[in-house]
Length: 272
Image (tube, rainbow, N blue to C red; front, side):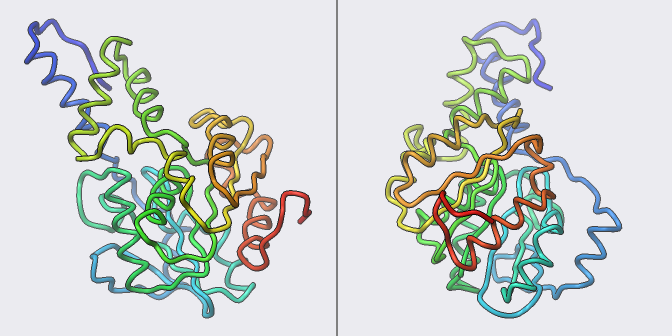
């Protein structure tokens, strides 16, 4: 947690905010569960030139899966069997600084560049699916040229500035400190502040997109999904109930929506 101390002066204040930036970009390392390990045993490990840990399951057109913050590639366990049965090859990667991939710090832009690199190595892709942090990274990767026919964004943000602001408030920063914190994150990640608006990037994306968000998501509000759908020219929105930010990844109805969209595509009026 970010803690304010009695140290005074501009430089001391900046130092504490810089420490908060480091914390913001550093995911915790969480151990795999027996279920995670079992899913890995059912797949085939890949040696990607970018160094990211990756596993493949099945054969057919390729779907790339991008997990969320402090997650891992095996957290797609509810999706992998259904995608395989539908005739897809599924590849899931651990983000930089996550699980079995190297690194200690990562930004959404690092993740996006890594996904774009993975796409160049294994692509073209039939689709890319991202959750939360991975949804934002997938959208930015498409902006960077990731070759995917379709995109699915689950519980993703529309504004990274808002994500940074919420994190700062959650960790005890005052409203006066928040703008400086946002600026320092942008400087550390070498990304202009204007590029933190994902909805602005979505305007130029050509792929059909399925955006899924739960009404009760306490991490990223539903308004973010509405903003993305409004900005993305070929986007469809599905709003779920009672799953929140994380349980949405094990919801059978969500898996059905995603598989159906990746296989055939559909409009908002269609049913699953």
